[in-house]
Image (spheres, rainbow, N blue to C red):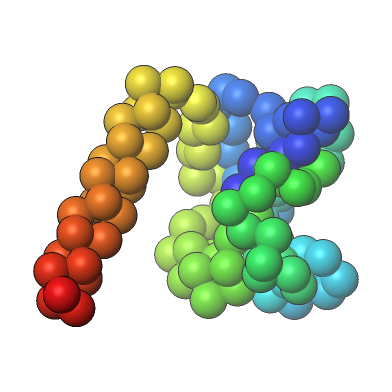
Length: 113
């Protein structure tokens, strides 16, 4: 996921500038560094999969190790990476998820009546 409010993920268009196999520590199975300025930002795995889905990084984009391995094997150095946040898309995704959970709850309530 994305960085903490105090260390947000940079927004914009960047390129993958370097890649590392098994960087270790909190970076998980793979690291792909970005050309973002103002720090050392990248896309990487994690040694704490429970942190995925939470704004907990120092600005990097964290992924499950199996996903970052697949991405690492797919994209070469120089690949363009666009990072942006669209509030409308986030809100629509949230509402769709809530609707899905509501329908699922109704379905299971009906089954167990």
